[in-house]
Amino acid sequence: MNKEIINNPGAPAPIGPYNQAVLAGNMLFISGQICIDPTTGAMKNKDIQEETHQVMHNLKAILQAAGMGFNNVVKTTIFITDMNRFAEVNEVYGKYFDSDFPARETVQVSALPKFVNVEISMVAFK
Image (cartoon, rainbow, N blue to C red; front, side, top):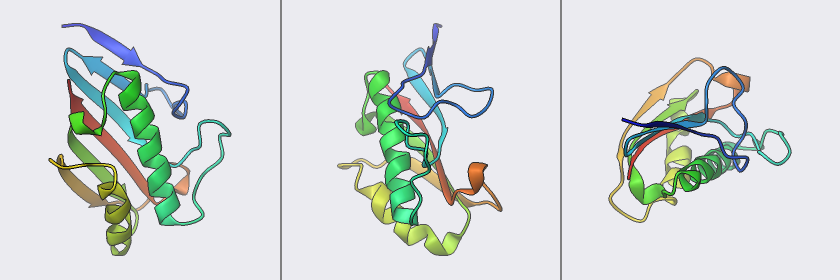
């Protein structure tokens, strides 16, 4: 099986020893994305909706670099620091899928990188 590293300047550069994504055969494993604007390096976090939109834009850029889109996503994991904000995140997240939503879990955590409120990772199938 071939393994291809995916790094796209349309998404933020990794902030640690990992890649944006790894394509293994026909499976794409996308590292957790936070609300970093890849063009400025600034955090897009005036509210949790803006954070979630930026996360989804970053994920979209990585999917596109691998020749895929949200319709290829089979699994997501949402990490959130306050489960009371889940409805707000869920509303934004849902706008990026037409139908056939992927499998998903949502987990409340005590903290995330750069002290953001939401991080999302994905697995996609080509």
